[in-house]
Amino acid sequence: MKTRNINIILLILVVIIAIAPMVMYSGLGEDEGYFGGADGEAGAVVEGLGYEPWYESFWEPPSGEIESLLFAVQAAIGAIIIGYFFGYWKAESKYKKE
Amino acid sequence: MHIMEGFLPLEWCIIWFIPSILVVLYGIFRIKKITEEVPESKALLAVSGAFMFILSSLKIPSVTGSCSHPTGNGLGAALFGPAVASVLAAIVLIFQALLLAHGGITTLGANIFSMGIIGPLVGWGVYKALTNESLKINSSIAIFFAAFFANLLTYVTTAIQLSLAFPEPTFAQALTVFMGIFAVTQIPLAIAEGLLTVIIWNGLKSLKPKLLNKLKVINPKYENPMENKSVGDN
Image (cartoon, rainbow over all chains, first blue to last red; front, top):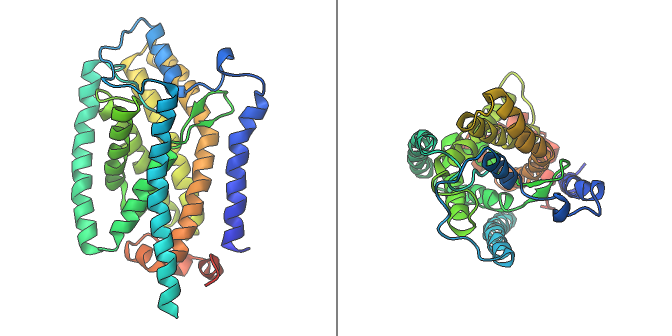
């Protein structure tokens, strides 16, 4: 099998892994305690022991919208770099042969 | 795997900061050395860091009903060794601590220790063991397991760190709770990370086989020759 086809299959598997939980718990949302972050859950356990965080983040994204903006920026920075070099390498190997 | 800002007692913050600072400094030294010896590897280094940037921003739902994210630390570890991956992880974690309030400055040492030291160390070890002369496993399969274990062990480390700091009522019971939150949630995500790492690995292998060879990451003798030619149409 061509590597490209293998890659497509692998990508489909990743999508299935991401979608499966949403199907398993369909109809349930944050209000029912689903799909929150594991980091926050661990934090809640620690707070449940009576521990008070002794230091607060000195800046937090003021809303969920702004947080998602910053996450998108983070992913975009990564994607630009990978796309740039893969395109560069692809063209490099193509024109070296000609 | 981010331990939130202020959620570790001061003594534990210091304990995790010490090894993290040392390894990151050693990683900077390694980067200097590798890029001097193989200047073309700078682009590959950028790609490894970028991969970590993307993967750690993707919060994916898991079968436990909570969300977590991949780490992306297996790729850099397999390519450049665990110390270099520590530097890349430190950059990502500082970005997230300052701009996203994910993790924190006080817990940075602990988070670098899990995502930048233990995860990459395990991923690198798995990759080296599987591609060893005696096993000769194809590197695309080896990188899957490297990424899977690097991801999983990152979260196991976080669970252990929290249990050490909060052994309530006992260390073992606390560990069960934190492992339930982190490690179980992480298993499907570790598989997803493994698969994504294989995809980028296949790309690197077809576009830059000589560079990977020069970094002693792949041995062309053990790679399936069909696979090497096939990506793209060239």
